Image (tube, rainbow over all chains, first blue to last red; front, side, top):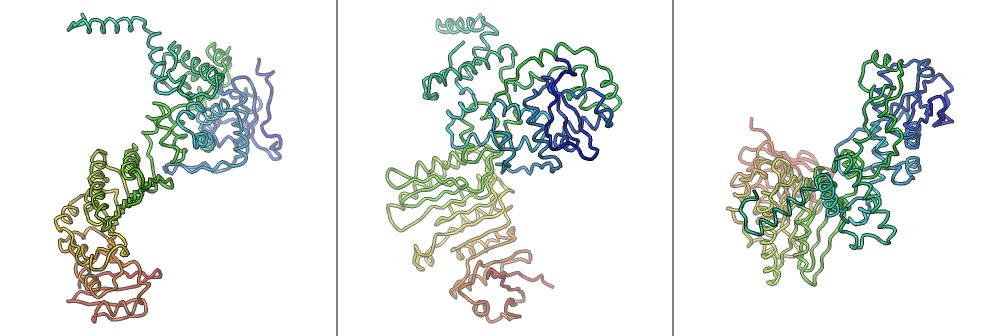
Length: 201
Length: 396
């Protein structure tokens, strides 16, 4: 799909600029284009630094190709920019070093993150990649809340994680796939050990 | 492929659950095999080489002129970019980088945090690398029951089987949490005249000593509170606390209700124990000492000059003549940098307190007085919370 034919997704229809504001264009890896206000971009340290370095004028923003964010798909990027537009102008929180972190999830964020786990993890991954501190903060809290009152076995199911034993088995399987001779050598070594040989060679 | 060993462990409610799980697991292992990065965070796989298109990756830290130059020229797309673009990103929990997983663990409540360690090896390593800050760990052992608190979480063991052993085991588990940081550690072991309980608490003390010895680490604790009949417990606990972190020590006997006044008169502390404690680094570096129900021991300790490090020294409010005599004895040994406090004189008006303090007390106004003895002058004040604060004036 060419860039010209790519669907243009306006993140926030109500936020169409009345006064002259700069709207940057970004493109996801599945060629969806997004228009995001300058103020909303400030929530992402990565994007903010990028647009500052590029030094685009209002004409550049319209005429030049959209900035590609190649690691993130359109569905995830839409959520990211929706969040940025809603929280534009808000101060970026600073880590106070306390553990456990006390985080409250605002109503808007809770609704935005009412999605399946796969998409939620993509959103977290994107927030980390684009360095959006507060989005990362609330989305991590959402995942942390999943652990509430669950047993380790239940947590493994929620997070789709193998147990230590299964992990070991997977590791062995991977090693065997890499070097099938290794197991034979190990068995031969054990056999010789049983026979009382001092040295393998 | 080797089947995972947890199949019949009751982890899955239905076969379809199991099938969906195994599908994910196979996919994971397959990817790990292909990538040859079994325990690397998989998001790295998506960080492909920069293309010629303007992108976040290839333009992030370049100069302005460089960026403009690059954005103006668009050549045909890189095949590596295309291949990744066509790829469906299947992000799972295990795909998240370590930094993000740490952020998630930091946001898990204290109740659920220990369970995270049991989920997988990676989560255990990450969890252990993070501090575990708890407001308080409290251990309370009575004849009838034992209770262990972790923050607001309560582990209660009642009389029946043997409440002391499981409670001590629980305490050991909590104190053994890696990177544990405590605001307050509170230990209270009751004491009564019952002979059965006397035997029992002697045994508890031995077990407690073994527990502390097996910790093999020093825990950062800001405030320590110990309630026991003797100083043995304090002597045991102080060495397992990190010196310099400990700011406040509270050592108290049990409530007056349990004992007759005669009991206190008969009770004597072993001065050798006091000396041993005062030589510990944890004691020397602490700044505040509160000693309740044991003024007599306080005086004994002070005769050895073991209190000079404490800025604030809190003692019980004296009521009896003998207790005022002990208080005066304490004041004599104070230096100019120390503050002596008696927590509350609600039962005694300030002017009466000053009268009991001695004939050399001169009332300045209703809230302050001056006490003089052997050339040393003390300012005696009462604050709004009815605490009496005594300071020694510097010698001219």
